[in-house]
Length: 173
Image (cartoon, rainbow, N blue to C red; front, side, top):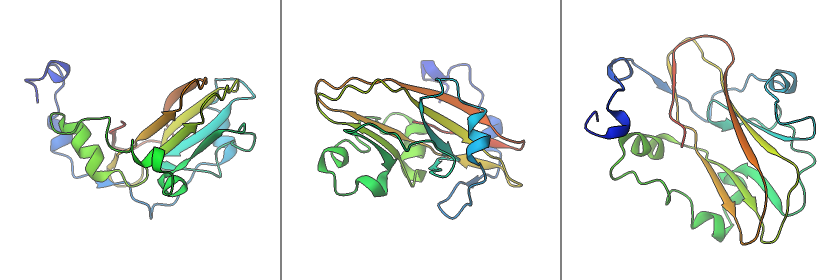
């Protein structure tokens, strides 16, 4: 609410009055690898992880040369990893933050980066958050969890892009 300092000057009226459709697992992904390349800024050797409308787009990503001890995927790829599951939905408090609560309720496929203990990854990981609006106004609840085990070293950078035009709201955590 506007009672919270971080929302004091943000008018959420237009968001509250728009009839959004939430991005869903059934939505087809439209971005290609060449579309994603235009958003690369972390160098030609960077690992590109494309998150299109809140969902990992493996086809548009460049993740074939991920070093040993580094894993990137969606929640389905980590469902049997107890270390990851113990962190999922625990670090962003939704009791006091309405937008975190909204994201927690609607996010269907968090993106997870896990780096094992003592792994030093010299390759930059670039997360490309790409929104591709459609005909209907779209609400995109994206979430990323990074699990850095003891003495791991790596760099993650994020970039945010809209590919096309249309009404949308991103709620990234």
